[in-house]
Image (cartoon, rainbow, N blue to C red):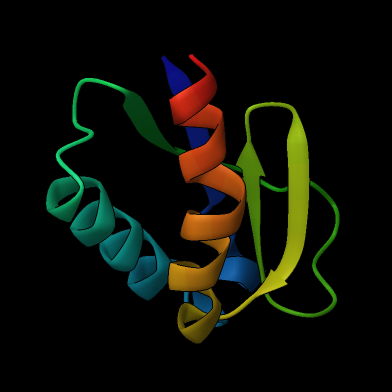
Amino acid sequence: MLTVQVCVGSSCFLRGSKTVIAEIKKLISEYKLDAEIILKGSFCHEKCTGGVTIMVGEKLFTGVCPGDVHELFEIEILPLISKA
């Protein structure tokens, strides 16, 4: 089981974390990975400068925009699922 955490602190929320979460939920559903991925909200990772912060397992991604989600999902998340 892979945990994906999206910051919902005030800075990330204003930069689009709600949309990022919606995009990740959509991809989890499309790839039928509901049993493989836990999607959670989290609070500040103190990396607020550029965009939304996402933690995939133990790896932190900063400055994520809604338009980045599909690529991040395919490059960073899917390979971790296939290794499980």
